[in-house]
Structure formats: C-alpha cells, structure tokens
Amino acid sequence: MAPTLSNEILLKAANEFSTPLYVYDEERIHFQYSKLSHAFRKSDVKIFYACKALSNINVLRILQQLGSGIDCVSLNEVQFALKAGFQSNKIIFTPNSVSIDDYKEAVDLKVNINIDNLDILQQFGNIYGNSYPVVVRINPHIMAGGNIKISTGHVDSKFGVSINQVSQILDIKKQTGVVIKGLHLHTGSEIKDLEVFINGLQLMLELSKQFDDLSVIDLGGGFKVPYKPDEKGSNVEELGAKLAEMLDAFKASTNKTFQIWFEPGKFLVSEAGYFLTKANVIKENPTRNFVGVDSGFNHLIRPMFYDAYHIITNISNPKGPVKTYNVVGNICETDTFAWDRELHEVNPGDILLFNNAGAYGFEMSSRFNSRARPAEVLVNKGQLKLIRRRETLEDLLQGQIL
Ligand SMILES: *Cc1c(COP(=O)(O)O)cnc(C)c1O
View 1 (cartoon, rainbow, N blue to C red):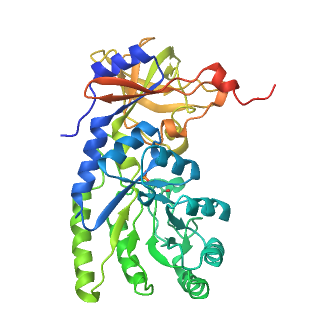
View 2 (tube, rainbow, N blue to C red; view 1 turned 60 degrees about the horizontal axis):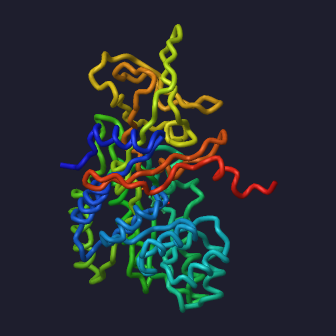
View 3 (cartoon, protein in one colour; view 1 turned 90 degrees about the horizontal axis):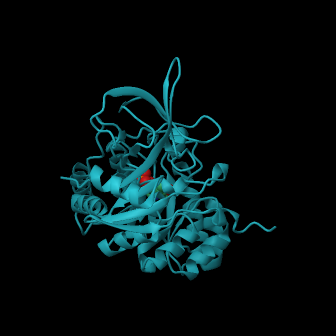
C-alpha cells in the first residue's frame, strides 16, 4: 500500500508552520521510486528524476540517495543537482531555446547533454567535434499528454528535431564528427496511454539503425498519476514487461541493445505532496457558495493554468454536513481552485487540504500580488522538518534598488 500522511500530522504541520504550506512525505517518494525502478529490468533502464517538478535540494538529496539520476532543464537546476550530490554523469541537461553558451557551460560541468535543434547541433559539432558525445531530442510527431500546454511531441510543437529531418542530423554528424550517443523523446505530461511509450520506443529502435554510435534511448517522462478519485495512473509494471519484450526481440534480430532512460517528474513526487490552506472567508451568494482561502494561483497555478483537478478536503471538519462550494484564492483576478466542489461544511479557520501537490506546485509558485511564497516541510516517519522557510516582506524587497 502506498504510504499517505494522516490528517492528524497534516493539521500538526499547519499548526506548527502556519498556512499556506507545502508538505512532502519522504516515505512516499521512496515508495514511488521503488515502484518505478522495480517495474523495469535493472540492466535496461536508468531513471533520471525531472527536477523541474520539485527542486528543493532536500528532495533532490532523497532521490540521489535512492540511486536516481536527475534531469535538468536549466543550468541552475544542474547546479542544484551538483549541490545535492549527484555525480555529473548522472545529470542530464535537457534545455530548449537556450544559446550555445549554456551548452558550453554544461560541457565544463561534464554533464550529459541533450540537444534539441539542428542549429545548436551544428554549432556544437563545429566546436567539439567528436570529443563530447551528445543525445539528440527527436520530435516524433505523436500527440500525447493531458493538455495542449503539456503536449510536447506533436507536429507543431517547438521541441526537438522533427523526425522528418533525421537526414539533416546525419549530415551534421558526417560533417562535424559529432558523436550521437542517444536519441531522446518526451511527448508530454500525464500520458494515460502506454502505447505512446511503446510506439515511441518502436520509432526510436527503427531510427537507431541509421546511427552507428548509439547506446541510449531516452523515452522522457510523463507517466500519469491519478488526480481524480476514479482515475488510474500509468501501469508502469505493464510498460516494463512490454519494454523488456521489445528489447529482447530487437536484440534477437539485430544483436544490438540500448540503455533506456526515463525522466519522470510527476510520478516520483506528485502524490508525496500536500498543500494546506486556511479558509478565510465563507461567502454564500445567491447562486454559489464560495470558500476564500489564504492562497491563490500564485502558490498553486495548476487549476487555473492547466484546468487541473486536485482533490480538496476539509480536514478540520471531516464529519460535517456536505455542501457545495467554489474554492477560490485571494488573487485580484479570477482565481478558482475548484468549481462546485462538495466539501464538509467549511467554517472560517478550517484547514483545506489539496492532494497531489508535490509536482509543479511550489515549483511554479510566484510572488504575484506581492504575496510571499509558502514554506515547505518534509515529513519522515512522523517527524516534521522545515526545508524552506516562509518568505517575508524583506525577501520580496531584496534585490530592488531604491
Ligand atoms: C517536464 C519534463 C519531464 C517530466 O515530465 P513529468 O510529466 O513530470 O513526468 C521529463 N523530461 C523532460 C524533457 C521534461 O521537459
């Protein structure tokens, strides 16, 4: 059974550290990592945590100690990873729309480099020739993902080199000598359908026949986690069995084999995270009941940005009569966390819990409306540890030149 935090400990955290508050369960991160790594044959698969989901260094350390690698989309994330103790060969740098200067810095840091366009591949090849093998991101023209904003592998997506332009990759390889050690694809987030990964691997295995130095196929991240009560997450065990079968068949016919890399973000941390807010205002309008909480899309943007659904519970009054509310934030524009949601009756001061807030929660928070960002707490076997203090007015003013 997947570990979850009790309402009791969450209320304790809210009491001790105040709200709004992010709380992460270390045991659940262990559980998710173990579930994923056991789904695949160890010899085939390496896991690189996509740290843009949640990059607090304390969380990175947990994954580092579990043996995970790490996927970084910016140089600052690479620096976080190094600070957390990841060895450079366990770090992937997967940026897009950055200049060659960022890649040069990544070379100096000796991390794995993933190149996402022909122009940079050419420049990189001109500078480094065959001295620094790279991975190239392919756009497979597959539509996948829970929402257009998080779909990254379709024909009109900005990501990767179009699968129709592979001949140009080969031209650059021939001309500059650049060594292409891997092919990468990441088609999106919240991929329900395992076929997306299976078709992706099939495509990459076909493509691999045109590349002589290839040792890695990186299938990206995007495993689905359940947000709604009736949803199911990706069946990673089924995927693991299917991948093993495909790799074996490929080996039997070509005598070639590859290391498969995955870059899960959400899968490893989403369900480990809880967001706690306090009801400030109850407003019973003629058409709707509103609960106004002490937070907003500045702290959890997923509902407004992705139309995401988070389960919300009133953990202060778990037995109260059920009423229907719109749960709204305190930002000065439409700022709705949930529409027409059934909650046990909410009174001012009650703590509302948002589930599944570990991924892209704190990480996408901002200081909009000049409100400070929340604190973060890590729970390990009942022990609460503050891992980021709440911001203050001084933090908000810092950096402004008066
Ligand atoms: C965002 C991202 C991921 C992680 O996606 P999840 O949906 O959180 O698993 C993996 N790889 C790349 C390149 C990404 O941009």
